[in-house]
Image (cartoon, helix red, strand yellow):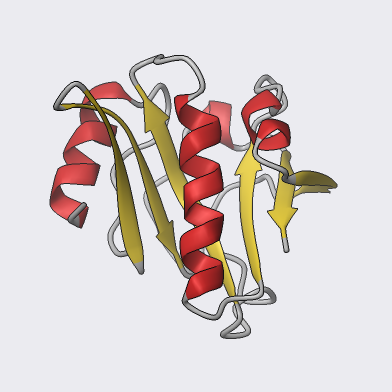
Length: 141
């Protein structure tokens, strides 16, 4: 799936995230010729993980179709692995249980991140309040 189409799905359906700027690849999940979910995979946001061997699921979004998230996470890992990557990571909010990730074989590494990207020395658009809390990092390798 191309990035513009995946981003449009995210814009319409994601609960708290906006579309992304770039990606390595995107995946669309189709049921009866209708897109029911997308997964966007890109370089890791954390510069410490950006080794050239790691990718990050930056968006996973569905319309609520049963098992769609697990299918997308599993497919994203198989695609990344076939391209030679050694690890795939993603982050969830504490309010998100992670059942889809566990179902796809991922494991929770622990708490990570939080805060606001905007600072005086590096002005950015403010991070929404619900995204400033610490998150859980998940990975599959």
